Length: 301
Image (cartoon, rainbow, N blue to C red):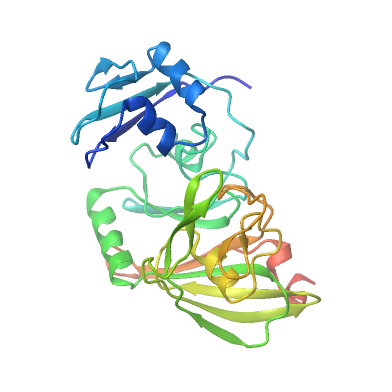
């Protein structure tokens, strides 16, 4: 596999960190050790307000901190997608499981955004799916379309429906879940999103499609758009996704050796998007057929 082109990670410091550049990066980005960050400073990869930093500088609010990451070899990921809808304002595609939506976690070119922009350079993703989640991703092609879709999202008029395979047999037919979602401790990352009373209001509706031995197939409508919302909410009611390496019953990370948010192993699919076209106002109903494992027994036969 060939190397990518490298990437510049930029951060405008919003609050007074009160620590050195080295300590700040080491504390905030725990995927790398202090020694690894020191080596990056020595190689001249970190700039502070455009000047090569040594790591000893005391940071101030408003400064621009940049890490120039050299080209690297990315992990393998699917490099295909299916076009569902296209016009002059918007487009929608089906993302396969295993392909990140946006650059993160060591992925830059092996992302849906990179692949889509190779054909539509102006495309702006209006939301994201987790790496292991498959299904519909909506893009805007103009500023006016992005503004209209953003308004639909913020006002809650964008309908989003998923399918998920959960552990355990659900006792109820329907669950209205309103567990708040915020940052909770994680031993490797410092914090990840999880069920937290101090978090942001979140709401999902889960309905049983089929019960299987020790499993339940749900369809889930999300009425807010918090990170990892379906994984957290189904875990919160005692039905974490089958194979989820991170969340357990209660909506918190595993007590021992929790996985990372981008780790796969579970089945979650964005099946429907229903909304008004941002320019014409015409009703739009986009569908991504679920994978076989997420179909009911009757529909899969």
